[in-house]
Image 1: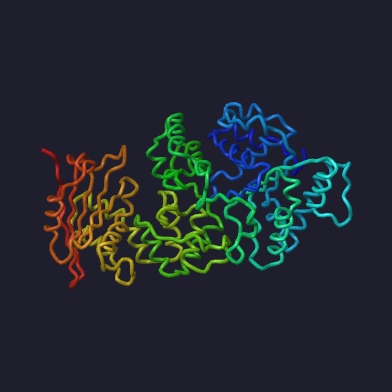
Image 2 (image 1 turned 180 degrees about the vertical axis):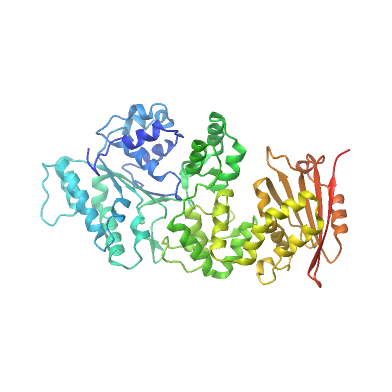
Length: 525
């Protein structure tokens, strides 16, 4: 066992000794690529979405110096036809690049990487002496020529150097050249049975082309056949909730909402496991340099990005084109670039059919609120901070206080909060009632050309609060808004709350810019 060659199965054994959700289906996908033209895979995932556990699982499965059968016997991969064919059959090179980015900060970092790997691999093959001037590929080719060895190469955090060093620096140029040397030449096809790289970002583009276009890429934007491997599915979280007597609805509210490929309900796995261990749902999103970048990107306000961030806080989806992003966090030149970075980092979810992104859940929404506060967007921050009181006033039936609360959220100096169309009306109300999302599921209706916007708040499971229907009229009166609510035929999910329902009618006068409100408590007789 070495530091980088044949590291064994201890890391995956620790994962199995903990609460483990079976993601071994990934192995079958990678097995299908070995010794083919598709044998190079780059799988990029968001932070805290199980990159290192997946890499450790692959190392434990392929490493021929250990017996990992018992670790996989009860997992899905054990029933796959390829299981026996590749189990513990290869010398495995395992490289975690953060081992080097945390130690070295100069342009020679790749030289240190290459030398460390050569030293470790050379010890395992004393019968194949290196020659002066050899680099890692030279050594691997000599081993292949003398012994016929073919390696599996696993790189964790492959993009760590890209995130640490800016483009067009010596370190970055050296790293790209090293990757090309290892994986673009015919030699790589001879010495590697397969290569698996994982990180946050897809492979960097140069002049719209990937620096390593022979890799098959799987990402949160283009997951291919690996979508269910990127996080926990709804069924997996339901099973965990049942096993540990946790409230699934709370886990769903906090950590669900990611769409990856055709998987429309993916949970953040790290946060789910931490919530189960601590038996408490809250934000487990640790402060990172990535968050600082998010705040900086939003502050740039490319093409109205600031307004879009507020829209997403209000529950809206935003159009995004991820195809132009160069896969480099240091090269951001448009709103689409920023939104695409946020998708890769896990701050936003993405629907590939509609090319739309949105804030997936309560945990991430809290981080976006922090970004808004960090950028000192005072009108929005004030509205968010006052939203708790607004909900309390609504539940208390204090119509005058509710009218004042809505006015406080309406700031004409912030474009998104200007009452210029029905969508903006609903956005204002969504921001004003932001705090209600803790206990309610918010539904918005946006009929066109009617001059109103509806907000429907349905209490979450185990929340003992009435449902709330809010309607806003323009240049009429609050009573007209209440009448509109009463005439509306609401769907069954609202009628289920007819025994405890609060009707809120709000009128906005464009000339005076004042709001009036009527609140009616409706109970089924």
